[in-house]
Length: 197
Image 1 (cartoon, rainbow, N blue to C red):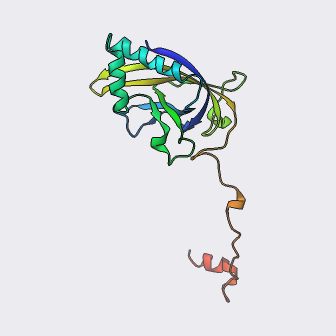
Image 2 (image 1 turned 180 degrees about the vertical axis):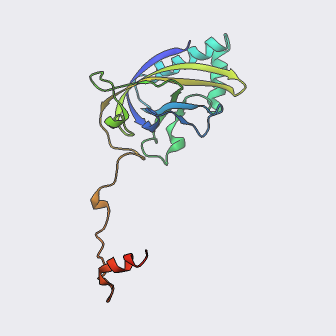
Image 3 (image 1 turned 90 degrees about the vertical axis):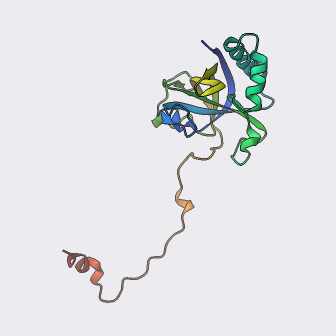
């Protein structure tokens, strides 16, 4: 059993795996999982709570050595809380932290009034804001040592500017194309098509 934490007011990214389990590129097990990324400001009021949750998970796995293990894992970037500056080329990451969270079980996904959301609702989307419930746990197996975050649930609370991978194109994104006049003697093209059969 890990340490459960609800983190308020995070920004979601890579939400396409919230409703459909997908295989992660860097997954050691190769299993399909539901997942999301939570982007968190460096001055977020719950940073200390997040770190305490990871420490508790580490101490539970390695009694008496949790602090040292967590320090080693952090140095090797083998914890779920990452420095957003390492992904500064991605919109929304620079100057922030981010947490990768996943689960083989489908997480609860709800709206502001705790109504259930489905993929067709289009929320949450990459760039929107909300709350997230995670469970921190320490891993020590054939795939290595880590402190991970299991994704238990998300709540969409407000809209935000879309990040990469969200939305659809608008007609104004295209230019009007001037069609050339039909070639002389083409007969409008219908007889040419009929001649193919």
